[in-house]
Length: 211
Image (tube, rainbow, N blue to C red; front, side, top):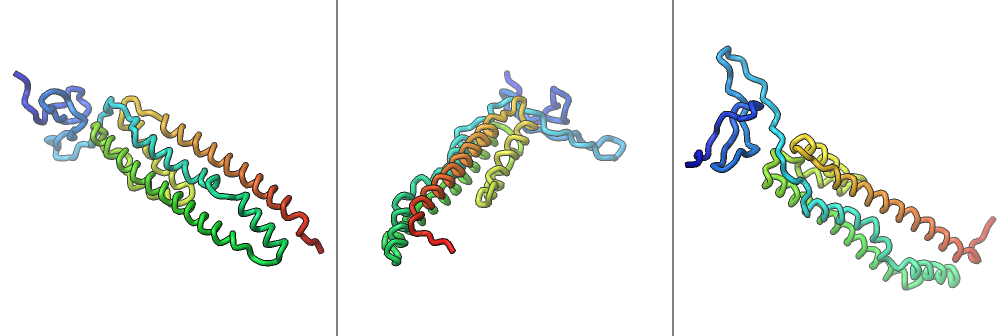
């Protein structure tokens, strides 16, 4: 006959009591009661659990956080440069600029949508970690910092640090992958900036006047 579920003395001796679910020990524990002397015992930190920390949601969050870096390639920059050159040649504003601005707005909305997905996936990741028995994983609400420049780093770094402290084999892999993706994203953006500025000045060369 198996032992019924309930609070029992922690077999590891790290904390006071631990919850037995009827089949195995769980990560839920309670500190020791006040000793006879009347002073409060110092609560022991939660025991580390041996569960996988890689979820599908954290990888989707990383993918969503990288999308805004590459949305610039969705815009018709060649058409924009042609419109600028046409405006410089005729001295009037090209009608194409209006449609390009609408295209720019659409791409901007895609970027904000990607950040919204990043926040959603962070919440799903946090919820999955709790289901796996991890006590107090890094809170998903920190993902809202993704609305700010470099804010995505807050959840990714905090998640890795807390899981390292809460689990036996906390993995840094998602953090390193996110860093790698971010570096590649910035390299792509800087390369595009150099290309765009060079192409634009080359196209406008004949129309530029110097004093």
